[in-house]
Amino acid sequence: MKSEIDKLDETYNLCLVNGKFREKNKIEAENHQCKNAYICFKHKELEFNWEFLETIRLKRNAINYRGYLLKYEDWNSLKLGFELHIKTLIDEINERLK
Image (cartoon, rainbow, N blue to C red; front, side, top):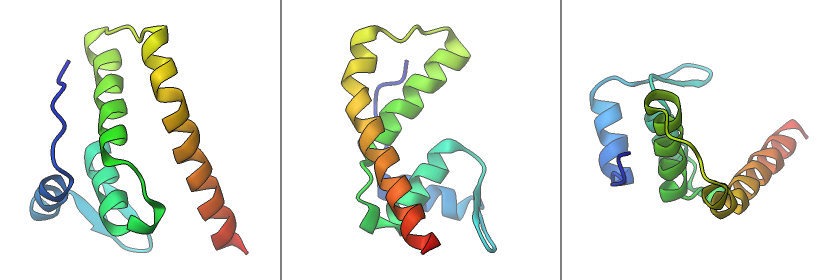
């Protein structure tokens, strides 16, 4: 499994230069890494943790494409990060719906 996390600024710029983003009324990106880079770069007020998002993206890819099994200890170490990011998204959505 790839364990090196790319830098946010470099990833965002690479996605931008290579036409991986399409903005209309919403953002579209060709892959999860570009979507994560966009939201972290353009919405810093959400305070998403780029390293966390990259870590779970890499683990997801290892599970889906290379048959990696997620250990209970791995899930436990990521659970709080999931909960925090999900809560942030829910709060932001609720705020925008007001």
